[in-house]
Length: 294
Image (cartoon, rainbow, N blue to C red):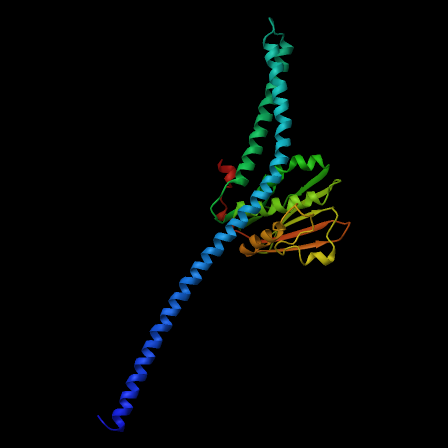
């Protein structure tokens, strides 16, 4: 129509067409934004995995020097005793008391070889790239495995390591490898805080629907002004060249990803206490650890 109603109809149709075009553009922008968000999320996840791996390798470097000495002691004993047994076997006549002594020496060789194997197995478990998977894990097993990796350094620094066993197993829902990474980072920091010896205490318990892990040391402590910053990325109190300051920020990130919590209390000259809370796991869903499967 070529009147006012026709003009109104034409304007309405034009407006409807513009709205339809705008709607399609909004949908396209929404889809584009969604794709970009997914891409950035994947990139952030990849970056986070790389940072986790870097920090794990840094801890592994420190552990390697400790374990080199840890392995040297039993291997030296194995070599010495093996030479003695070989020498006794070369004698023309072996007296009964010599046979008894050789039997004891061979038992020591066997025990020390198993000890070396245990150390290497725990180091490989820590270094291995595990796919992220959560299951019901016993905190006590993670503690024992972690302490075995740094036992030589504990002995060298004359540190007394105390593990307070819980009344019943403390089972938490976690990625066992990542929680061991958390514990190793905290334990190395504790050792560095006690260069002249001290006491390291680890305790676990179940509080309602939460598994609680407490690590305390009698080291130099942390000034109150620094306590609020210790979980910040790249913040470190160590001298230049002795660390990037990522350790505790990574620890914080892992615990938060597990829907847990971590807190620190400290006083200069009186040590530090770190408390970690993780969601409890059902006892019926408890799965054997990798250590038990090996």
